[in-house]
Structures are given as structure tokens and as C-alpha cells.
Amino acid sequence: MHELSIARNIVEIVSQVAMEEKSPRVSVIHLQIGALSCVVPSALEFAFEVASQGTPTEGARLQMECMPVVVHCDSCETEVALESPQSFRCPRCAQPTPTLVSGRELEISRVELEEEPICAHG
Amino acid sequence: MRTVDVKQGILSKNDRLARKLRQRFEEAGVYVLNMVSSPGTGKTELLQRTLKELSEAGYKVAALVGDLQTDNDAKRLQKSGVPVRQITTSGLCHLEAQMVEEHLADWNLADYDFLFVENVGNLVCPSSFDLGEQLRIALLSVTEGEDKPLKYPPIFSSAHVAVITKADLAEACEFQAESAYENLQSVHPNITVLTTSARTGLGFLEWLDYLTQQRRAWLDELKGAAV
Image (cartoon, rainbow over all chains, first blue to last red; front, side):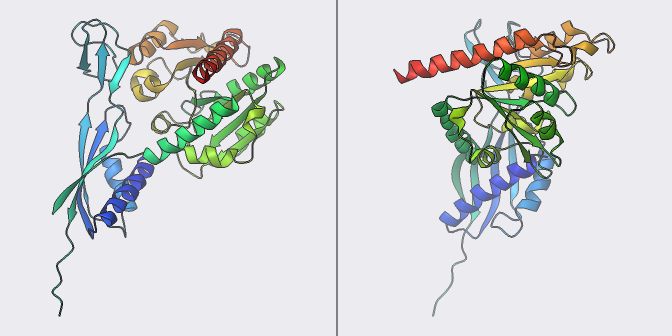
């Protein structure tokens, strides 16, 4: 259940962004989650619900984009996405492809913030 | 409503700290290894013999041991007569760089050649957390089944070396070494695979040789970078 650690980090980073941007509430958090990152989306959502309580991120929706494992195939001299992380072989030429390009992402790409309500003075 | 780009790693705080630790390890010249496996693979048993043999060969070694609740592993390892410190995570399923840093605070790292970090027994969670180590070792015991690498690709693909443990039980478990090797290669092409038994000492020459060679190559690289 390392999702709780991940959720706490998301809350910390995004709360800071909200504060800097003077936004009272975060509505959506866009994440990039690599296929090799070991994150279970439902577990992360659950952990986030707990970790976000009492912060500007409470109630925000996690929008997770799952990123494929991309390797460099030396034979085809190109980057290719793997069909499964169980087999590091080029789907085109079937050669073993040890050079990982991406797939471990755990990144906050952007957030959608609500604006401070405009108060009428006087 | 407005959108703000963040583009920040979720674990960037851990990654920053791990980089700082790595730099500290480099300055001290201590080679740090992060051992990961499922519970019961024999990390502590392998480590106990490794610490003893490296120490007898004249190397100065130390260990940090992660565990959810107990200090049983640290007590076992202290029998090898080298400095061992327990990190109790109180339920957390993996070690983080901050825990390593806290537990090393008063150690003079320059006194050591090798520092082993035994992670919490878990094949999933530790894979995302850099501890500043130079080498990540994934263990696989013959009692677990040959298909573990296929079930847990991230940990085996993030490791630099795979060590098969409890090889003395291979026959009794009908362990198919070739199939285990193929599965490891499938999730991590060209990964070094070593086979050991901490009970009988099988494969220990190669294992210790591998460790000392890796450390030497790392030291040479550091020297090269400093010139």
C-alpha cells in the first residue's frame, strides 16, 4: 500500500501549487502513471481520499493517464511501446530490448483550480 | 476554473533526498546496496553470511534493516559482529530515502566499504523509491516459483542483478532454473543472475566476487570522474 505515500506526496505538491496560485480548491489533478510504476488506480483513489482531507485538494478528482512501457530497439533503431511489461522484446523484430525509455512515470502533469470568489467590498 | 501546468514527479521529494544521499555515499566511498524481495526469500540469511564473509575478507561492512514491526532481523544480523541498525517502518510497506538518512545521521560513512540496506519484504512497493543506492538486488528463492519475475515485472526490471536464493532446496522444490532464468531475461534482458545458498555457501564465491568487482568498478568510475 505505497499508494498512501504517493497520495500524501500528491496532496503536498498540489496544495502548495494551489496556495501559490491563490486558489481555494483543486477540482482535477492530472497524473501520468507508467505501467512500471506499480500504482493501482483504485488504491490510489482511496488513499488520496484519506490523505486529502482538510486540504485544498479535498474532493478533487484524479485523472490518471496510463503510460505504456517504451523501449529503444537497437535493431530497428527506434523507440517502440511494449505490449506487456512481462516481455521486453521488440514487438516488430522480437529482439530483446533492455533499454528502457519510459514507463516508470509518476508525475503530476497539471491541475485544474477553482477561482477565489470575487467579493464585493463596501 | 483555470489549468496550471505542474510537471513534477510525485516522488520528487524522495528523489531529491536520494540524490543527496548518493552524493554523500560517493564522497564517503561507501558502496550501497538495496536488497528487495518478497517476505521469506532469505534476504536476512543471505545478508548474514555475506556480512560475515566480506568482513573476514577484510572489508568494512554495515547494514540497515527495514522491517514493519520487529527488530528480529537486526538481532540475527548482529551475530555477524558488524554494525547493524534497524529501521522499523511501523506498517509502511517500503523504505524511503528519508528513513535511510535519519538512521545514518550519526554514522561516519567513510569508515565503511559496503553498506547493505535490507528493504521491507515486498515485491511491489519498494520499486518506486530510490534510496540513493548504487546497486539494487532483487532476490528470488527457489521455493517461490519460477514465474515470480513475470508476476512482478517492475521490481525485477528496476534491479541491477537478480540473486536466486535457497538453491540447496532447488531439487526438493522441483525448481526449474532454466525457466526462472528465461523469465528474468524476459522482464529484464541481460540482467546478471547469480545462484546462492546461504546455508551451504553454494555460489558464494561468485556472489562475493561480483560484489567486490562492482564496488571496484564504481570506485574507478568515481576516480575517473574526479580527474
